[in-house]
Length: 324
Image 1 (cartoon, rainbow, N blue to C red):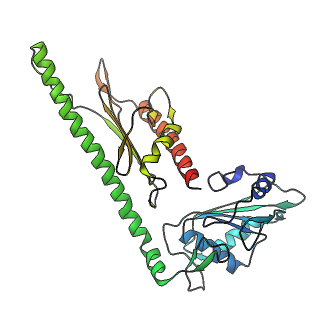
Image 2: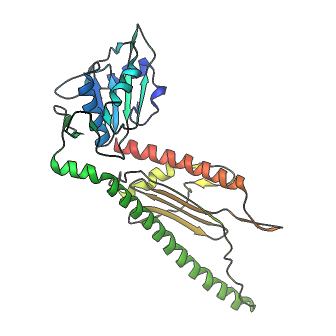
Image 3: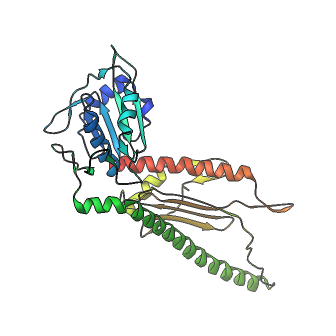
């Protein structure tokens, strides 16, 4: 069961028990608590998640202090736990993005799941606490005070994320432009050769195109989730299509430094790019030649956007699963 990647409200009490029995140890993004700690301790834990990579806290599972694996999964007594979490969050500045979910009750026992998202307004810290807390990945000391160097990184995290996203976009644009220029040269040469063979006047290359470009990427583009050359199999497994469009295209992809690219400009222009750090970019000609000339319809645009989102969702899910 992929508790880090699935929607929390799909889990029942029995699902969490089954998950605990799998014996998955705590990690940078996963923490077990037999019951709620004090508000102060919970705030430290939550800010540590927000300051690091985000993650899920499962309340109602007791852990082995030596290796972080579950040793009990009885849940906690049912109550107004969502209000308790909201109260804890109000004592954090700024308030991080979070989700809280309480499972169905069995014998008046429930599990409480808290998902804390990686923050985009770092650093996060509890009120009346001058320390900045981070996750360490260590079982015995999962939360610690950030070093001066780490604190400086947290203050600059949003700025660095903005620069990383811009760099990603530049790389995607550079790849697209390179392939487009090379294809235009090929089409020019093909047009000259055809005109010479048929002894007719060379036809101008059509320029009137409407391109829909869709680009998604993580807010924090971390280092590559997988090696760029290993993204091809994930691409092939993420296929989604309708009568308008397919994403990702099931065809020959080529390697680029940061991932994979598919480019075709014969009957229509299609350029799809997938980076190992999570960026997805789709550029597709959505204008069509009709009796009235070149046209673009809203239905084509929305249909293509839906399929791109669907394929991107599957790709990201599989990408994250590879890491976990």
